Length: 325
Image 1 (tube, rainbow, N blue to C red):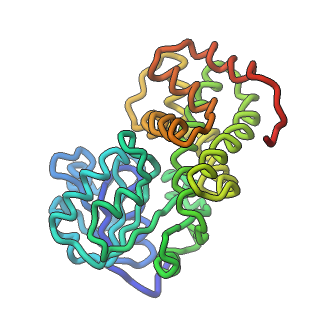
Image 2: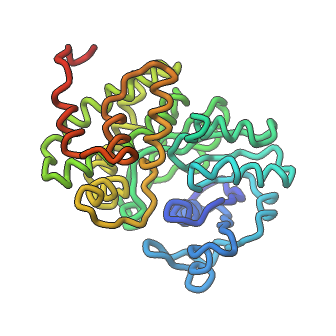
């Protein structure tokens, strides 16, 4: 893979997804610096071996624990825990960073405030910086072995979308132009909650109900997106429905595995973003007066200790109604 317009790109976050992005952008010809904190287990391992459980980084990728290296970048790609984004970007802003394009490569909603991630970035960073989001389906394991996929870039600024897509597209990832920032961010975050519900169905050996879960999940999140000012059709794009295979069926899905293990009372130590997102979605549902039955069921199971089988059964005992009302 080769890129005609090489950029200096600083990848903030060296977890599973951040390290893949560094690997990908290096492969298509960009000059990549991968950042992780000094006490990060991931960064320590990369410093010692240039490997994690998924990929091997080339020698051309610069590894750093010095956040000030961000000053040399054209693009800053951010891949951190969504609940820590505000803290991380506030730290970046203290360095006086201006006139850069920040690309957010995470899926989530801030629990305490209900803010979308692009809203957090706008509020934490200098207004001279530009904000885009990078969303859609795909697993590191599949990309690394050469399996292509489609993803979406969205931003309030059409020029930012155009530039970013031109610079990072390749035969491995085909990027589409997003047309609804609200819908794309909410849809991307919410699919992780639906993924946990799918894992719970697997745990009860009820996987055949995933088709119904997908149909009702898209309708539920579409109502919320519409109430928040987004486009109802966005939920059927790459941000949400297009990501269902990777989230509701793939064994690489951390949210699916978390939900399944929860039902089977088996431990799961990896990050499942849907565990946090369900709290934020529930608050947004209350704020915008939108009924979110799947979200409510997952919340009650995870946070109120309700019986999972009974809560899932309730979803199929709700009052009868037209399918598309």
